Image (cartoon, rainbow, N blue to C red; front, side, top):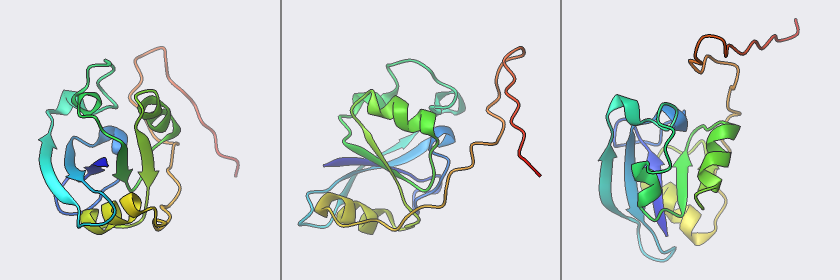
Length: 133
């Protein structure tokens, strides 16, 4: 199983997958310890939030899954169109979380993703979200 882990510091699993530009790429088979096979350190304009092409480097890596601490519905749907499952977890250790995922063990549940934040839409495309008081 080939897994990308959102990791802005290359040590822990971090959140907001759409804006992440750093990924650990791991190979895991569910029996042996996962192996780090690559690190992806993308320029700012290549976060999936900002880059909208189907030729994104993550889509070219034959990934089975992404591990993150947080992802919005749009991110999950976009990755699913490329055959990549998104797994949000509160786990922080990339290797143990990848081992659990590959072995089919449950991951600790992540906090809900807050989709009530600015997505930087172009003028004229502003989305208002009003929370009840």
